Length: 518
Image (cartoon, rainbow, N blue to C red; front, side, top):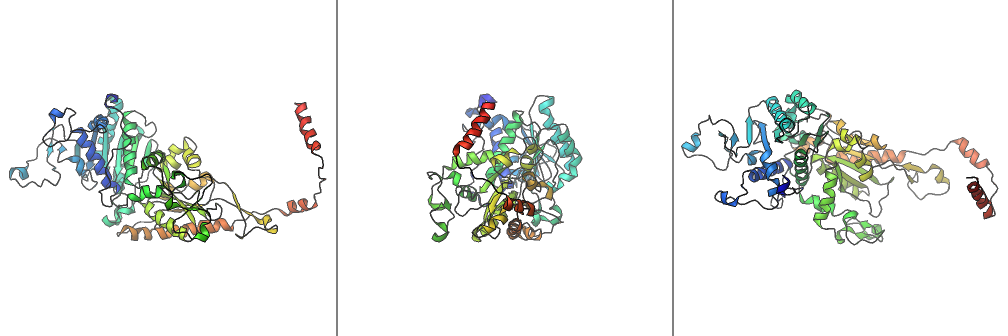
């Protein structure tokens, strides 16, 4: 594998021409590209007619692509693996291909006639999730049993992972190495029916779950999972469970929002503050309109964010370094996962209009951020890299200018948080307790209904308006907290008299005396 060169951290899927794509669409692009790489000879003399040669960036993926085996329980097309089928599935050719015989085959649709050619890389099962799960687990163990690192990729509607939970548990128990893509997932797939709306949210040892928001995140996660499998660098996380959705997202917002962060601005002077675009001159003061300050190169920004994505979370909207940003007064952190990032972005914009700075932190892996894998290093990424803490910020109790009398009732306030995700409450409900701050959790708490995602989000109170209200709640509750000083302590302070020191030598003599004793 090393002789082929080092795999880039991305498969470089071009998103510029895609119209409002979603993560399930992206899965199809990634697997299709790997299938093409696997089925393309490195010897250009052996290329088929109109088959293009592999590029220098694609060659390092050659071995990984040849080891990838995809499978699904009758849902290969609806989970968007059909581009990877490339017109073929693996199996004994016992089905008569009447379409070819009579010349009526539709070339635009995947051909489900089985074959045993080298290029047939998809295993099709009937609606038997448990059988596919067992097959995936068995293929994933070949790396350890025979030394052949086959990488099985299974897709299934996330809700129906429950049908194969027994097999899934044992796959994790004996440390099989695989990628399971549950897609579509959550109440986000509500247009297909309410009965599919409850995700398979399991927290099982040896599992790592991912729930990307943007397509680029999925690209990084997918490639990193493949690399870890081939390098045997996935101890404690061999079972990769990725959630996808069929709700499109404006992909350009990813880099556009990252460019607004102060840490990604180029040429700013030390201490210079930014102002959100549209802020009045009166409120802006000496700050610079953010939109007028150039950002770093996109590649540099993405390289920094990629590291955060692969550690479990990243700042999508970050107002640190903006004028008027007052922790303990008008700052709240919103943690959003998966497609609920859309609701968090809209809520943050609405809150900014009201003078509230709502940072948006996208959670890509709850296991890495606040789960078993995060526990291994005392949640280092959450506390240190993202800087989420329980620091107290002193603010006047009445939110005015502090005078001498009010100093006694000065409130020590922390930055509260709101989390919102399409899944069970327990996925993100411990963030606040880990760092010691007030948290409001928005999640799926009841059976769902069929309808448009926006309407179903509202039904579950995980829509943008509910996020705004939750932010108002935690900010208000934080503002109502008071620091009380005991009467005894106040009386002692009033009655205490001290003789002021008039000569600096009195202090110096004590210090030097102590030093002499040591």
